Length: 429
Image (tube, rainbow, N blue to C red; front, side, top):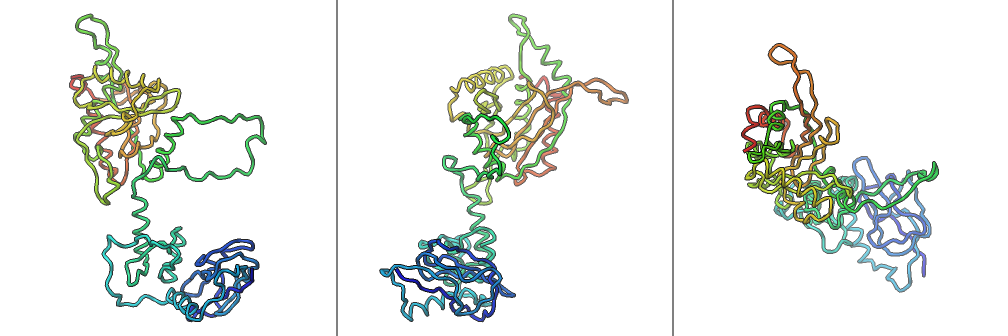
């Protein structure tokens, strides 16, 4: 083993520049091209990489120091078997490469690679990417390893546009839910047990699986929620008057069946709500021609969302039976996994429990979800007098990338009409 000094190479016209970051510490093992320090002048900043591989023995510089070419940065311990002493030609090439980092991009660049090929990944990440100090700082602020990119300018020089394109492509990549992990948790300064008796147990498997989807939806979809109330007085009177034509017994039809039929009618009128953003091809959306309505089912194991398939072709009685059947399958964990996917839009109802307005999370990859609260009798001013009406609170969350506020308000208005007295009889068909 032997000790060698790592010094500041030729960095152009930089002189007496300030060290703003020290990126290594004593005892740390470093490899070639690992960043050691970041320096900053009045106009730009740049990272100084290592030209050797070894163990850091002594860090000479600290934040705030002024350095120039030849200033000692640190001492490292390298093995004698490694090529510790570079030939003059190799050092010259390394310094030339570092110098190119700080050279301002010429106003007349040569041929530019087409936009669809920019920001491709380098096959060898150990190669030092060409980029200006400003671009390197931009990449560092966004957490992008610039040495993994091959830019669109001459000799693969990376620009800010290349970094933005790389981030955009990465965000729009299809999500692999099998490998997707939750964000890192914040370490608590004090454990819960320091304040009293606690119990630790495993999360229910259904909730653990659902958490990945929920985090993905909440992190990647810009949610907006519109709240409104629907007058369902006539609908409730009609629903409570339904009887079996053969037995004369009163039919027990859940209000949710009517809401599903009303929702399908609105989806036909507003097709953008029955769509998904195409994550493979940028700028595209998939418009669905089917009407499979998701229903959030509360089970002892956690929330599950099976689909009522082809709800547009079913009457109220059939939908009501389907709701009971899929709910029972979910509670007994006998639902086919495929039945939890391929939906048009989801309804999550708290009507049987209580509550009014809330902000439901969109069931990815859908673009909207309808939250339904518990209906209440209220005094409403109608025809110049106050009358008692049955009002249903709704909360419509939507993906603002596809749906704007005005369209969401019109959707709510249409849904209100569909559940009003003029449509109650039609929905039963």
